Length: 352
Image 1 (cartoon, rainbow, N blue to C red):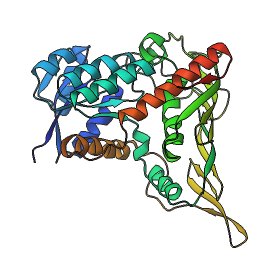
Image 2 (cartoon, one colour):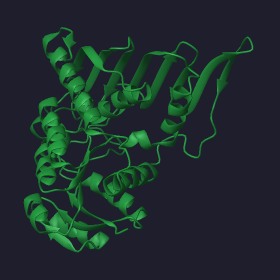
Image 3 (tube, rainbow, N blue to C red):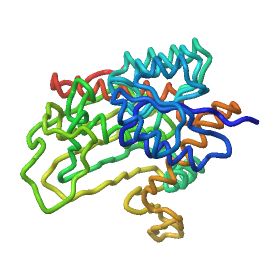
Image 4 (cartoon, one colour):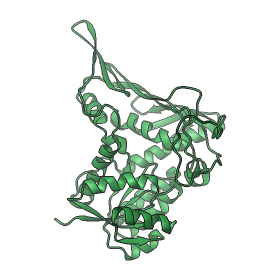
C-alpha cells in the first residue's frame, strides 16, 4: 500500500515533534509539504527535514500540494479554520490539542469531518504513553472497581511560555487550556469517558511572567514576548454522569515545587500516575502497593509522538478505529468553557 502523504500546517515548536513521529513511521507516511504564516520559518523547516514543497499559507498548500492528510500545529486560534479548510479539501486531519478555542468551534470541526467523510483526530498525545496504557489495562480489567474520584494536577513554579501562549486572542487562555487539557482528558479517558455534567471553578492571574527571574532555564515559545492576559492557575471540581468527580489543579506559575500527579480512587483499589505508576490495593488482609515494570515510567516525548503519528496514519489509511476521535475533543472543550464561565460568574455551570 502506498505511503500517506502528509502536509504540516504551522512550523512552530510542536511541529518538530510531529516530524519526529512521521520520520519514525517512514514505512507508511512521508511529509511532502509544510506551510507557515512565517514563510522563512517554513523554509527552514523544509530544509532541515528535506520537505519538497513549501508554502506561506494553508489555503495555497491545500490547493497545490500532493498530500492526503495534514497535521495542524498552529496557534490555537487557527485550529478551527485550518482544520475545516483541510477537511473540505478532502484531507484527513490530526489537530493538536486543544481542538479549538471553544466548544462551538470544536463542534463545527466535528460536523465538517462527518460531512466530508474524513478523519479528524485530536492530538491527545498522552493517551499513547506506556504508563497510560498500563493503567488503562488495570482499570478496564476491573482491578480498581468503580472509579468514583480522581485528583489531577500539574504545578509549575515558572512555566509561562510567553508569546502566543499568553495572548488570549491567539491561545484562548493560559495554564488551563495549555496544561489542563492533558490531565482532564486523561482523567476522563482512563475512567471510560463518562459524560461531564457540571463544573465549579476558579482561575487566578496573580503572578504573571516573572521576567526578572534568573538562574533557571525556562521554555519560551518561538515568538516569545512578555505580554500576558491569561490565567496563571485554575482549580475546578468536575462532576460526571456516572457519579465520578475530578478535582483539578493546574498552574503555569506558582510558589511551589514543580510536580505532575494523577490519583484515581476506586471501590476495589486506587492508582497514582506520576512520577511512577503505583497501584494501591488490599490483598490477603494486607495493604499492597504495586509498581508495574515499564520501560518508560514518565513521558518519553519521541516515543509518544511516534505512537500517536502511527495511529493517525493507520486510522486515515487503513480505517483503524480512532483512539482520539473528534467527539472527545468537543467534550473537552465543553469542560473548558464551563470552567472559564464558572470562574467568571462564581457559580456552578451545567454542561449540556
